[in-house]
Image (cartoon, rainbow, N blue to C red; front, side, top):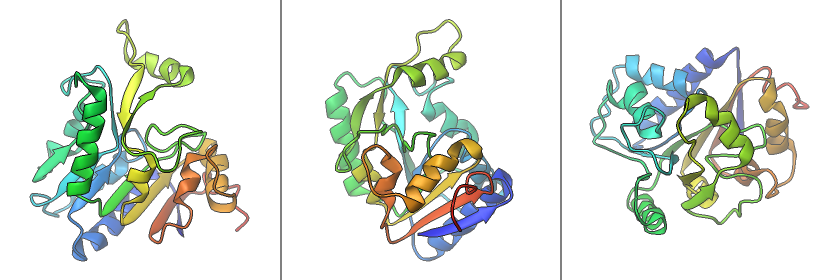
Length: 234
């Protein structure tokens, strides 16, 4: 486990980009991507760089069930706006939130992951230690699966959906899918992530902290601001 402390999210994005650039020099061609505010500065670094992504493939962690790729709150839309529009990839994949058979869609995504093993995976972390939509209690051997979102997640998301019905499910890579990546870069910023980071770094592996599944990964990098790292002993 490699821990890198940075001043803020902007510096963290630059550090994550440096790790990606080095990984690409060593032959990485498949990226695992995440959405949300945490990786935004990382994507900004990619967009303003001169790196060529035309031969790169990406697979995203998750997608809401019931949203089309053109819906402004879908993760497909997020990725298009913040990355793909400016940096075209050879191919990029997300779960299909409109699939009629969600179990078949999860299996299809597992097949994509088998065909395109991830070289470099970007992650954020939730306050409760979740990664992707893998909430506490998720088995570490879980692959891509349909997740029933918690009431707290649904309530937190409601502000983005105005009068629309908030999605109650998502399709997410499982923990086994995530830890299969050759290199993982997890970014965390802010004091509200400090407890989860302490559990990941200093605690034991436990289903109650999904991120603890990453312990022992041979190429795990944590990019943390001072607040996220504030509870670590050293």
